[in-house]
Amino acid sequence: MKTFPFPPAAASSLTAAFSKHAQSSMKRRLLKLLAVLSAGALLPGMGHAQSDKPISLVVGYSAGGSADFVARVVGAELGKRLGRTVIIENVAGGSGMIAVQKVLNAPADGNIIYMGGTDTVVVPMVNARVKLDWEKDLEPVGRMTTVPMILAVPASSPYATLSDLVSALRKSGKESFNYATPGIATMQHIYGSLINKQAKVEMLHVPYRGGAQIANDLVGGQVDSAVLVLSTAMPFLKEGKIKALSVSDTARVPQLPNVKRIGEEDGFNGMSLPLWQGLFVKSGTPAATVAAYEKALLGAIAQPEVRTKLAEAGITVAPLNGRELRAFVGPQATLYRDIVKANKITME
Image (cartoon, rainbow, N blue to C red):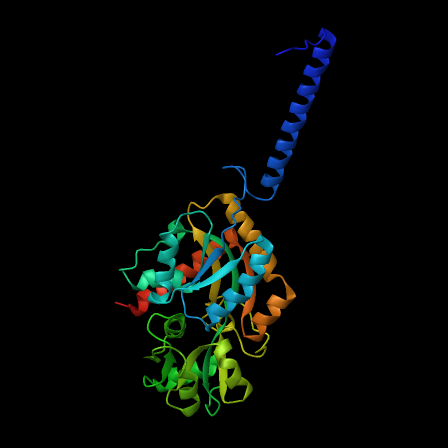
């Protein structure tokens, strides 16, 4: 085979050309890598770890309830902001504890999010079999909403305010006056127990198995009063069939501007006991992932259409970031614990 040796000058030029080509190729590969990284698939320790997998948003209650409604409204907007599909997974049972266990059994990679709330904190207090320490086991992403509860009486009741009722109970010593809730150790039960404890009265607790029938029985006079979530009570309030005596939230609600919040009543100064809902991930989830979810969540619930949908259902958008949610839950947990202990509330 005949060879054609290059002159030294030509060889030098060819070497330089190959070197330039190699540098250009390496540069192109580096730019591609940077593009991938900027899209979110970061190396460990460099930030939010993006994934093509759908995010599972685990809700501890059945489809069709208020928790499920909030999850679907917020989850859709959350998915848009994260650029990923958010799938709502209803894992009912155990007052939300089966759902949280599913999250704790999964890897701490951010692909599964838990929609928690008051039950996340209360249930372990009233059921020793539940081994959950939310402060250690879960990392807060942020609070989404609060759902006000009301103490309601039939429209024919002589009481117009909580003060009226408390005053009458103190004078008459009526221990037969009762209040209905969806069950033992529910937040409605905790709210009624708070009123008993602080006002030093003895309303009798009538636990139902769920809340579907309570409002109808209140209208029909089968029970004297009931603690209802605002979303359940609103149709009956609008029709003038029941009256609200107090609101459990941190502020008066727009739907009932003339009804005092519990913290405005004598003996309850500054107190509040809202049902609240937030997002959590398993402890150990990368901080950058948590931060990305927090930003997306706060952006989602700031959208006017999201706020409108939730408000129409009697649900208040009440945003807190992860750090603020942790700070909010601390004092609330102390209040729950005091009420549970004073009233010997247990699910066992």
